Amino acid sequence: MNAVLKCIDPGCGLEYPIDSTLVECERGHLLDVKYPGSPPESLKEVFRCRRDPGGSIFNESGVWRFRELLNFCSIDTEDAEQCAAHLVSLDGAEGRQSKPYRMGRVSKFTEMEPDSLWLQPEGYNPSGSFKDNGMATAVTHARMVSAGKIVCASTGNTSASAGMFAANEGIECDVYIPAGQIAPGKLSQAYQFGAQIIEVDGNFDDALRRSLDEARGSGGYTVNSINPFRIEGQKTIPYRALEQLDWEAPDWIVYPGGALGNTSSCGKALMELHEWGWIGKIPRIAVINAEGARTLSDLYNDRGLRWNGGKPDTGLIEDHYAEMDRTGAGPRTRATAIQIGRPANILKGLRALEYTDGVVTTVSDTEMLDGMSAVGLNGFDCEMASGATPAGIKKLVKEGVIKRDDTVVGILTGRQKDAMLPVEYHSDPSNMFARPPRAR
Image (cartoon, rainbow, N blue to C red; front, side, top):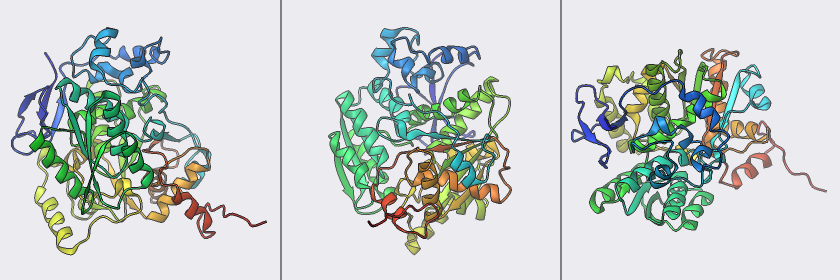
């Protein structure tokens, strides 16, 4: 029996063959990739042994090393020729260097015990962000269905990753961007990889709508995280974290909140692993929104929106979006990677929060910059949106939600691509970690 696409609404349950390019069922609900059976726990040892890749780029890859858990292609995962014929990889580089590290300066900043906090920098991916994990699987599916062009909307990191994979595979790539709202360092990557840039008057949400319309009309293949195959690759982020902890589940996994693809993928990974008996405890997910892009926080904390066993009150979401349109209260934050007002994966995100007894909070731009700088003082690089993770942990520790000795894995989603942000931050002596230049 092969994998299928299945509607996430328990009352719907529509299924589609795995070679479908739908991102929603015919009733407008998001889709999951569903696999038959339960993989044996003995695969943990297989994954460990593959860390010595033995010349295989698919063992070297931090995504395809776990290929038995992502085998929507239904291949013989030990057959090198089948792997090469079906799996898309940037020479094994996606996810290869991504694992959690302890960072003493960040532990002090968050007021956590030094041995309790782990941070996982996804900026070590080839294009500089977590996106490469999911792009490897999404473009694998695009190649499986013989797509000639991939299409996405982007605040920067998606365009860089999509452009890189498209160039490597020799296919076209159209990128819809909100005009004037992308860090030049991210935009330049998309240009460098030969992507066709389409500027949209509006924000990311407007660009996403345009890109989805174009994909439906032209037969392009959508690679935003609304695509269920993107989510499959992003599941390997918590896989690598759990492997580093010998598959002992932490108390918390913490992500910045943007389109909620990471929240959704982490939730799906934890649901599957617990169902298979691979983990005995379910970590709690914490989602950290920017104060200027706080849709999930407003709906979850202020309006009581919940997954509700698959029956969320979607009217609350529609009313909130209508109010945003009426008042012009669109997302506004310098952390452009999470400047998203209509999270495409909000329902999957709610499902993940319900399953893990998760929490949502917000942090200011100043707090994110402090978090970003604390990471930098440990010798690791991250962008402003990733600074939401240590800033959010600090806030949740102060509120007593996270205990100082809880085991916490925080995900740093991307590296710094806006060169002026650190310069501006450290030039202002009033900032927490500022190292202003001195005149001689």
